[in-house]
Amino acid sequence: MAGYGMIKVETRGKVGLITLDRPAALNALCDQLMTELGQALRAFDTEAAVGAIVLTGSEKAFAAGADIKEMKDRTYPAVHFEDFIGNKWETVLTIKKPVIAAVAGFALGGGCELAMMCDIIIAAETAKFGQPEIRLGIIPGAGGSQRLIRAVGKSKAMDMILTGRMMDAAEAERSNLVTRVVPAESLVEEALKMGEAIAAFSQPSVAMAKEAVNAAHELSLKEGVRLERRLFHSLFATEDQKEGMSAFAEKRKPAFRNA
Ligand SMILES: CCCCCCCCCCCCC[C@H](O)CC(=O)SCCNC(=O)CCNC(=O)[C@H](O)C(C)(C)COP(=O)(O)OP(=O)(O)OC[C@H]1O[C@@H](n2cnc3c(N)ncnc32)[C@H](O)[C@@H]1OP(=O)(O)O
Image (cartoon, rainbow, N blue to C red; front, side, top):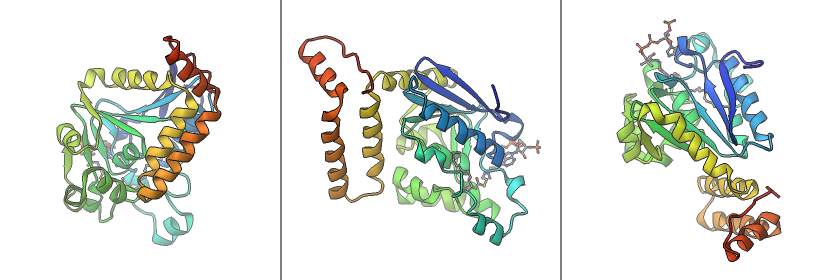
């Protein structure tokens, strides 16, 4: 793929597909990979023809975490004053279009955190999630302690973070960490189908639906409802709201123009 060394980037229909491609290190998230990932995410976010993004890895690993070898000699002043992670590793949180994580194999540490930063996680039967940082003498550093509890509840989050154990796909689905579990061989196809279904809708409404749902993690119920109401009202200024409701009344398929 043009310009990328550790990821593969393709457009499949209306879906941007990004594949982490550092197999020798089980897609360990090093600075170069994260820089490339951020560039690819931002590119798809501004590409009008793309309505959703799928992020996946290999059969063996979505990502086995941040690159331990790259981190092992770093010092407190260096990581603190550079704001390691915060300075450029949270690009996925700035993307307006839905990002679907298609996870097979290991999603550990930063790999699990990256998946949880995405909007939807669809897992293969082979997926194994974990925040094993405690085994390395550290703790999750990219939101894992904050997002995992919101996904699976305190006891399970504390269990995983304090013991460093992994959670298989079945437990991840039971715990609502993932939306669905599919056979490994159909993971990317299922994620792309989900992306195509989302990309068929009006991009303004999709972006605002994503914003409203994600805001629930940050706001009180009252403030969240207030934001949702503002976003709901604003969509009545779009051509797509007129087209969507007229199409229903006229018993025909809407032709959204993302306007
Ligand atoms: C840009 C927008 C997106 C922004 C998103 C931000 C995402 C967050 C990124 C930063 C996160 C920082 C904070 C984070 O919380 C900290 C961490 O992630 S610490 C790391 C946590 N992960 C682990 O501890 C797992 C380590 N790996 C293992 O335990 C095992 O490899 C395994 C996964 C159980 C698999 O075991 P095996 O099958 O036996 O395979 P090997 O162990 O032999 O591994 C093969 C090969 O890969 C290398 N490797 C594996 N994991 C890592 C790693 N995390 N870092 C570096 N290298 C890794 C391993 O060394 C082998 O290489 P070789 O020895 O053959 O050269």
